[in-house]
Image (cartoon, rainbow, N blue to C red; front, side, top):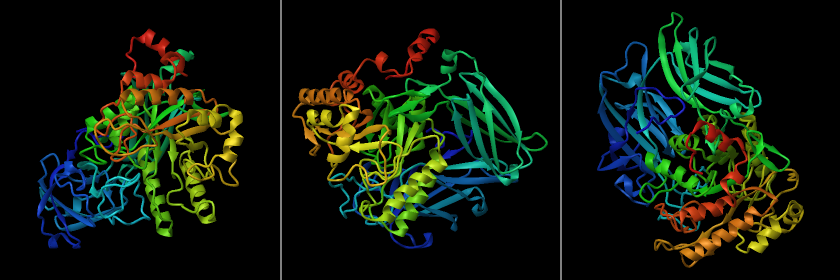
Length: 605
């Protein structure tokens, strides 16, 4: 098991996943619970891997885990013990040794509780009450089914209730780092660190060491005069483009920069040490192009739902890595993680392997003051957790007007989309944001279109050249919806076909559907090759996102089955995805020359 928080790692921690006692009851206190079964955390009770596998509604799930602190975990003078939860869907309340220690609202984001004052010696008992209304249409739920049977319908999938990401324990010093944020600046060859520390650390110092492949880039130290410190670190400039390019991160060259941070007190005694990483890369837009590190970069994305046969929304570490590598092997340079906030471990693999990510807020389906508050709270927590990952190159607050169903008619719904877009750009001006992916654009930096036309002549007519944009905007109705609403000017923005394809092929006997159909492997590959050749010829497009990477339950329109078995030869699928040779498709022309000089093995592309 790898450390669950990849950009703020400490040496000592304890994984609390595994067997927990479980009960389905709506009582309010731990003392009233009769635990009558066992569940494997962090798998939701709806998933087979949890050991329960019951898709029916679980309005309240109780959990209990008892364990004993080791000598290294018992807090000393001034130390604290923290209990971390990766994600609990939807409302969590937590007790330790019978004392209430805190809670959290939101099904996709982490929370941390200081349990030190509830400890009564080395023996610890944790109780968790997880409440999740299966029919709550105003809370961010993504693709989770709301029908009582919960097995999935249309484009929605089995529910996820309760604990579904890692639970872990950590003993920490009082004077410590709480958070680090990295902001790269390619133009000025620098990195900006924003570090947040506890009040106990103020008056001490923060040491920072940056390195690449063991070579030191910077070694600096700063006085902590407040709980937030921001410093910009200039990186050594070799003055030659090829040498500068060695520092840049891209899918073809996912170069990370290691960071060691140490908090000391005024006397120089070490209080806290953490390991982090960052990368030097920029994202931009210009003249209808998406830019990576200042150069046009065609996006080849796959729609990635993030579900697994036995774990539902929860995967093992090996499964997370394998999915990232699968996308690269199939020729994609990125994915749009659809209607889900994935585990930080998956984002770390995207950073390390080299896979671009569009991160998307799971939708609500009803518009109410409460849904506005819950969407905003979740999105703020998502951005705080993930803003430093170099793999993330776009933020997507809304999809297909979900949660704002009357967007063309109601100014308050338009204001929400515009507001979350503006909030996103204010918190992170370094990445583009898409206000409402697919249609009915009222705000956003990219013009993204969903179009499942199976006729390649139709697609070529709509997107074959930049002059087609005006006609497409005027005449095409995606699912009956206008692509843009009054007040939004799409001209000059990069155009991304952000959902298309969806070719169904029943490769493993699973019944289901897609947007067009192939009868056998040869027919499936031929359809995919023809479709992708057409899309690559569409000069209006700055990129695409194919639906989809894997089958997902009743949707059998993936390039692989839900079990990740490819439906056709991977080499042939990858060639079709790329649409040209790797050499020609590499917009960062230094890459192969750099490989020739260094002898470094390329990341599978």
